[in-house]
Length: 123
Image 1 (tube, one colour):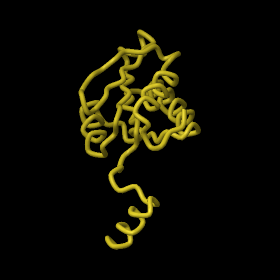
Image 2 (tube, one colour; image 1 turned 120 degrees about the vertical axis):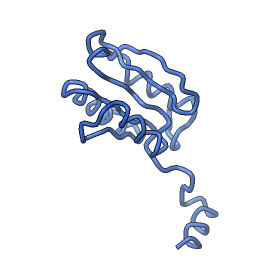
Image 3 (cartoon, one colour; image 1 turned 90 degrees about the vertical axis):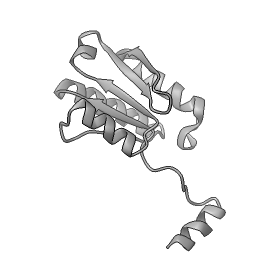
Image 4 (tube, rainbow, N blue to C red; image 1 turned 180 degrees about the vertical axis):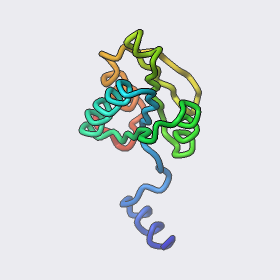
């Protein structure tokens, strides 16, 4: 099996280093999960891989999971963020976080993913 992957990778037909989604949504509560789900759908239609928690885990557990699956960004939407109509985008490699309006969330995420060319995204 390893030999097949090596041959495909050598021919440019297989990705070898990428495991997890570009963006993982850590959402707390039903309203936050709905926003995460809808935003994720839009991004997937635009070619960006996304995932989210479907088990209702704590924020800490969701962050650990996002790190484990090697997501580039985590979008955090909880009760505090909902009350201010914002989300937190955390870049996992640097730990840098920015707050963005929920109204601009999709555009901000597209811009971040296009900056680094994640998953061959075309912008």
